[in-house]
Image (tube, rainbow, N blue to C red; front, side):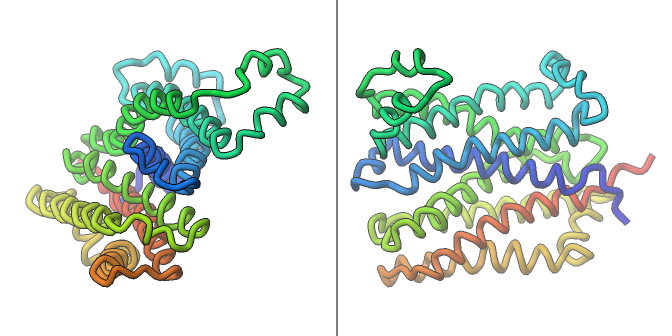
Length: 318
């Protein structure tokens, strides 16, 4: 029977942090590659920029209060920024630097889509009227976003990788102590970010979105294939390692968590989205509802991959 060090809160943090970082990366790729400007309106960029900050902020609060000083001793939270030998401190600094970039990117993208927002704020904002008057009437949005996205991508990758490193450095849990975990969480973050900002949000805004970007299914299939390969490698290494790591892998593959793994992660989150995108690419035809289901499946799989990693933790027997 597994002894869970951490519960659902940390699994949700890992999920939200990864998906927020992945959404930022997807939006940034559209911005930096010029795909953002292929059409007058790019819902993927708007959605990816808009959700990244709130998702990471919620996840960070969960991280601090579940693993850090917590609600019992909140005055200790500032000390978490000073313990540079702690992996958690590294993560808090990455998140603290990344979060402002997320919200700045969201504001720039929103004002770029709706230029009247800035004028509306100037007319009605009573709290910071002088500050708003310093903002020029017209901003070089594309140049500003180029800088924010370029810097933000580094922190986004750092955030996604950190969600895996946070577990991988825990030597007391052999299943977590694997170099595969940070890479798996990075790929999963990009995949869930794409599922959320492209397949779900953008498709609901522009139903024929996939027809605009005919090569996108190849990206989806590549990410899913790589994620499956990394999951397989994680399980194989755990089985070869033996002991508690092997028991954790068995719990996922054939034990108490196997239904969640095979149905929600592999079936709904990997097999169906891969098959849908393969069919859509070969037939050059995308359907609205199946596309939404594929995006939802990828997002659900991202959550339960992290849940399974956390829930299957079996610590070393002393």
